[in-house]
Figure 1 (cartoon, one colour):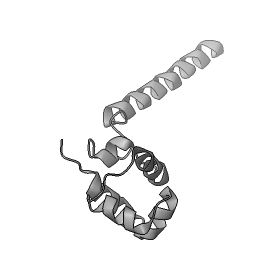
Figure 2 (cartoon, one colour):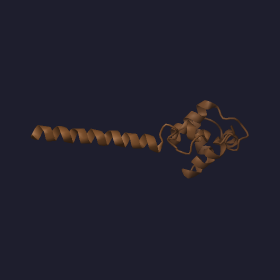
Figure 3 (cartoon, rainbow, N blue to C red):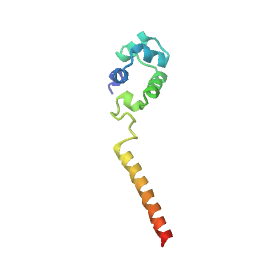
Length: 103
């Protein structure tokens, strides 16, 4: 599988109007090392990828390029729909219980 995290690192940084030095400080490395991570010239340690994911509030799946959903594979539209459906069913159940109480 081709590594897609190089452009993701840059895209995330640019989307937040940060420079390489600011992100390097967040993950505890130098700007020159971070630039090499972002350009694909150096492999980024897993711990630093985790720090980046936490900082940007995105999933590791997203950074790895496995999904385009920033929340990750498990957070698909289908998952969201199931949560809404469950919530709606709970509201219906409460309404039915209230109706029974009034009768």
